[in-house]
Figure 1 (spheres, protein in one colour):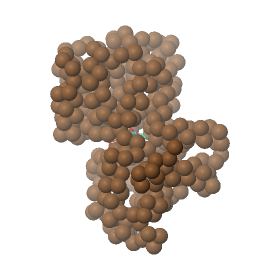
Figure 2 (cartoon, rainbow, N blue to C red):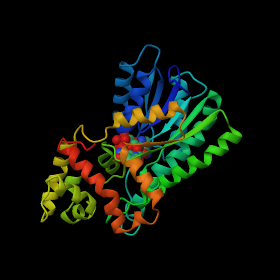
Figure 3 (cartoon, helix red, strand yellow):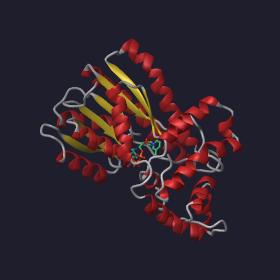
Length: 334
Ligand SMILES: NC(=O)c1ccc[n+]([C@@H]2O[C@H](COP(=O)([O-])OP(=O)(O)OC[C@H]3O[C@@H](n4cnc5c(N)ncnc54)[C@H](O)[C@@H]3O)[C@@H](O)[C@H]2O)c1
C-alpha cells in the first residue's frame, strides 16, 4: 500500500493524541476513516474536523466503542460498514490505549485488569473482528500500537508500569508472531507494530478518566507523592518547577505548570502520526517513533542486563532528561 487515497481505514482511540492525528492525516490524504473512542464527544470532534478539511469523496465517521468489549467492537464494525457502504476495510490502526496498573503489588486488581483489557484485549478483538475485512480488501494492513514499554519493562526508578508493560509486550509479541502467520495463511494482509517513545499527548488525563480515577487536583498529599515517581520529580526539579525540598502542595501546583510549559513542545502527536503513516506506506513492519525510542531500542539490545539496574536507569534516562529540559527551555539538543 503506497498510497492511502481511496482507501477505508479504521482508527481506534481517534478522540485524542496520535489517534486524532492519524484520522486527520489519513483523511487529508484522501482516505475515508471510521474512528472510534470511549469518549463520544472527542471522536465526534475529530471526525467533523477531519471530514471538513478532507478532499471531496472522503467520508469520516466517529463511533462510540470500548475496544475492551468484543460486542462493542463488532457493533462498531457493523456501523462503519453500513455508513461507508463497504464490504471490506483496507487499514486498521489499533491505537487506543491507556496507562495504569503500575504496581502489581500495590494497585488495585481492577485497575490492573482494566488497563490490560483495554490495551491487549482491545488489540486482540480488533484483529479478530477486522481480519476477515482486511483479507477482503486484497491489500490490507493491520497496524498495532505498542510502545517502548513493549521492549523495556520499566519507566525507571520507583516507577513500575506492570500492566502497561505486560500489555505492550503482548501487542508486540502478537504482531511479530502474526508476520509469518499472515505470510503463510493470508498473504493479502500485513502487520505493522508501532513503538512510540514519549509523545506529548493527554494520555495521563485520558487514562485516569478511562479508569474512573479522580483528577490530579483531587488526590490527597500521600496519593500524589506516591503517584509521581522519582524520574518525574527529577524532570520537574531539573526544569526549575520544583525545589529539592518540595512539599505535596508544591508538587500539585507543578503539574499544571508542567503541562503549560510543554504545551505544543516535545514530540507532538502530529509528528508521530506522520512517522507512522510514512512507515506504513514504506512497507516497514516495525516503526520506532521518536529519537528516544530508537535510542532505548539500541541500548536494550546492546546491553540487556543494564536496563533494570539503577546505573542502567541513569545511563538510559540521562540523555532523555537533558533533552526534555532543553526542549522546555527552548534550546533543543542536536
Ligand atoms: N503518549 C505516549 O507517550 C505514548 C508512548 C508510547 C505508546 N503510546 C501508545 O499510543 C497509543 C495512543 O496514545 P496517545 O498518547 O495518543 O493517548 P491519548 O490518550 O491522547 O489517546 C488515546 C485515546 O484512546 C481512547 N481510549 C482509551 N480507552 C479506550 C477504549 N477502551 N476504547 C476506545 N478508546 C479508548 C482515549 O479516550 C483517547 O481518546 C496508546 O496505545 C498508547 O499506549 C503512547
